[in-house]
Image 1: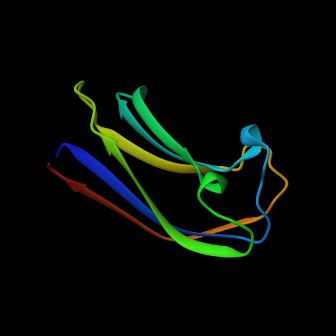
Image 2: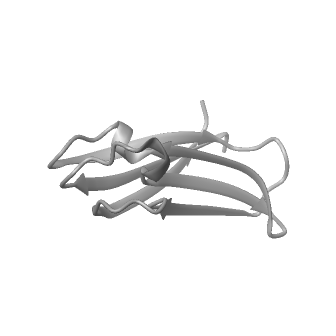
Length: 94
């Protein structure tokens, strides 16, 4: 497939305004345990205080070979709580 689309329900009580402390949703492509490509978004750029929203983001699959895809969330040393759930990942072509 040419694209990976990730859906995840996100809820925050208080927005993180420090760009470098915003929670990141990350998708990484690996070949033989070496990262060949990654894509990420910062959740608090999309959400406001006391908001719950299903966020989706796309990553084009790399032109290089890959044998593993890893999805992760990193709270980037932020001190604001975030709740994640209902993860869904699909693959598709144009």
